[in-house]
Length: 252
Image (cartoon, rainbow, N blue to C red):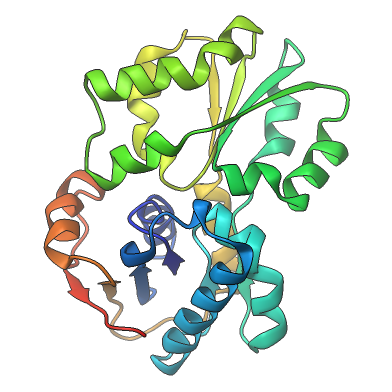
């Protein structure tokens, strides 16, 4: 699994819950976080190097647990490497099926919202709906800092959802793997009828269909290009009960 930071751990916990007998190696590329502000070329080169490293370590299935990296790089990665890839995309289709007001909100990174893949999703599944989009850079910063509740979180939620609430959106898409960690705060701040969509469980089901054979000694390895001490301090809060310790990863 590859992500720009700890956001993809929201996907890891879904995969581990569904596939507890599978060995998972997760790279938090925090030295390059956030991916959403980088160019597509930079992201392609970086995720290519990380993929090559994971394959050398025995990976047989790669999950790009980052919406921005999926949009920028996954097709190039599929063309370059012989292993299957699973990417992230905003849950526009399920959101379109749930809305009763014909208005949905999409909370995502700026790169994700500008991508052709997102525009195609909207034109395919939600062309008859009002779709309100909102980049949420503060959400990534808050999760990376381990701040999942409190005034800063509430202020960011109000800032990013104000226009959606004013437009009577009743379904909000969490279009970045960091955002599910803020789901409890979002549910506390938003009206009860608002439904939230994230795709972590769908990614886990896809992994179950493509996963390698059962391993005899399943394990979880977490590597970071940033500070392992910082991630180790976040793991009890982000993935309680997960038996893993983050180790440093050096890559040029």
